Image (tube, rainbow, N blue to C red):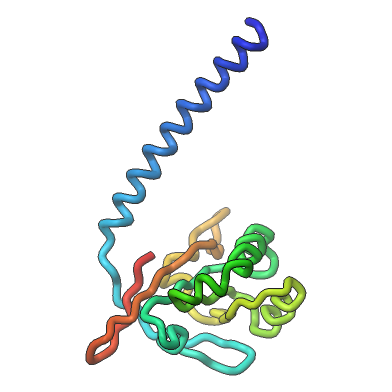
Length: 166
């Protein structure tokens, strides 16, 4: 086979796999779209300024994005946060936004400062929040934090209910 034939053959295989991935993603979007919002506990988190409840993180917004970050030790999570930091003003124009990690508030603060982050951060250290939201999974036979994003909506009625769409 010539180089051109080998290249074309390889690209055909790659394009076939891309189509399979697109199909799987489409199925995943349909499944995710079928999930009904769930009522979530008004969890309490730690910050450098003290405790804060999930409901307080909404501020004046009716939508809250919680980015589940694995903490300072995860380079990929750091890269995600770097990206969010660049567009935080635009995100916060429409919704409340917070980074949640298992790191202590002091570690979060020091790391955020070293990265130049303007992101609001909360610590779920010592809570079951990551687990309840589905961001602790088994890895190598033991529980491990996983990254992701939860979208929470505050249901404005009496009594106020927090709904999660992950």
